[in-house]
Length: 467
Image (tube, rainbow, N blue to C red):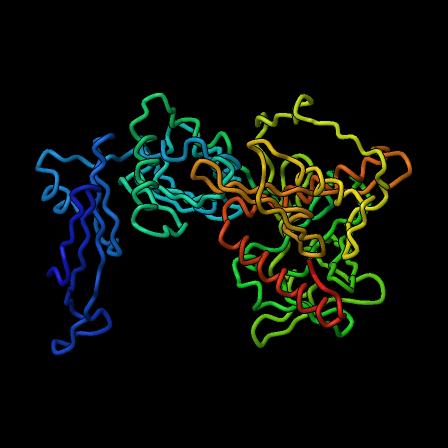
């Protein structure tokens, strides 16, 4: 190994980076004249507050003990074994995707790796005294932000999230280091918040407030996906999925909504899996790149997430169940603020282009515009339509922090406001869907910009001045 570029050192931030070049024999044959060249990046950071040294490298073939000692001295010890699992502290709704176990008694079965539904049967074993966690990888939420974290007994902690720059990486290191140094964090409770998948073939007796697109679809660029209904095609950011029935026992039905078209579907449960069948006059097609499929066929390959009122969700035939006894706090009654809706037609939700003064949306906007306190928002916008981030969005900079509030309006489904239980289920489902933006603020602004540009083009074509 030779250092090819660097090292570059930031004394102020205690960061070191360099790249190496390595020449090795090829693995596919005994050929002396051909060598394999590998380039690797190394990032090193000394955390003075927690007394920890962090090394991030594209070379995962070792624990880099020599580098540890070269930077921090011969008395350096890797932070490993059970204490590494402290890094999972405060990660809620933990969804394990990989779990490695070591048997401390059975020499014939020293290590086993489990993935997917297999984890459900294996997890009780991991809690026994003769089983030891070796490594794991999981998804979850920390402080409301979606995280993907892995850790290993050997002393590795990693994340699949992308650091925007070195400062972001250093910040992540310090957050992990604070947990590793916290002796009050118990590692035996690491599985307390795990959501386990269970294979099902019948509809669960739960209410679905929300159906959401598959995660693989949400990772793609919104303007690279097209949905077509009745020969009218729209881009992905103008499409929405809506649950039609908030019940525990009727078939699960949902609607694909675009600005001008709808297509209804029903979820069929069978021993050999789920199917998503169109109901009514129209069905939807999805186009990604050059490939077009019916939406039902695509959902069979990449199932949507159907979320239930107990905090669990269904994806394909796997029902992810929250842990028994999981803390689920009801929304505090003291946090509910009653507004004066006099003069508002509660059966009218959107303000529309004509800015209907009697609509619920216009009343909310007027109230926000009238705010002159520290909660004032200089930017207030209307995003109401299929695929919306929210009916109303507000943006401000406060004490150096970006503050975003998303408001959802729900017109009354009956003459008596609050009489229908469906109404809060619908608006809560909207709010739950929008939690994705908490972890993807840059994508939120791209989403809003694309939709706003599209609105201006459509209205201009109709001879309407968009304000």
